[in-house]
Length: 386
Image (tube, rainbow, N blue to C red; front, side, top):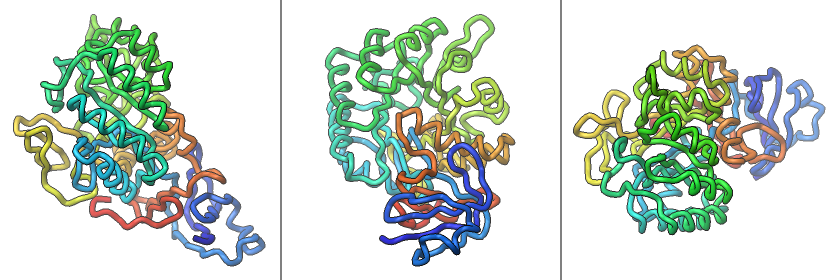
């Protein structure tokens, strides 16, 4: 694959923006970061040099909630092929590392997806593990999840999840206190599962008990959860006052700009971005089928026939653009919310530009449009909705 040098753009290394730097790629890895002024005297005269012409070069983005993409959902029907298609679709959009996400389904299909995830390790580029959003949720807050499959966690479930985690680089699990016990959360956490709270109508006290047991994440803050009230803080109040990491769908539809700004002000570095993307991501499709219902794509939203939001019509670059241009966040903060923060949450060393890491990179224009994505040093074909 040879050597390649990227120059001419500001560099976000995962923590800060730097000027005048060049990134040297050798094969599928980052070989060096050095001042561009040193290139004529460098040891890389034979490298192909790509002048980016301004903008900003960032690490490949990390998305921990990706339900679908490339025309498919993670359903369990053909899970290994679905995982590969989803990872490939989001790589073209800029998310070179993802957790394909399974929404509530049967125990049989859940086991099939877990087994496919283990099989995908080392075989599917961009696959960082799995996110199971359900089935152990609160029937009072199902969102678009099929209610017939929402159920309490059993001992068999705990054993299955712990066994799967041993074969996966990461396993994120969204649950609700109504369907799991603190003891179950503690056992899962001890096995290395990252436990999140979501789709929950719980009290502050119940959220605190889950946190004390090991839960550390709140899934899509503000959505499908008990809201902040004057006498009962609910899960929103718990998320903002306890040291939970909080996923945020930054599209202006799931969370208003005013609420998003407040969350960032209160939770600070605990906020990370997720796309909550569905099958239409990376395509021009106008809809898709989900658990027997038709989901329509219109006006930047995905909705059921009864007008319930069903995931998001969003990519992480679009979420970053929203954070910078609408919320007014500094670029370093918005980029960290989609790189270093989610990577650290699942124990990944990605999310930065450091010698030795995979050469996963995204180039943005000054207006936050994606002009190039490299995964493992290979330039990805641009998606229709990038």
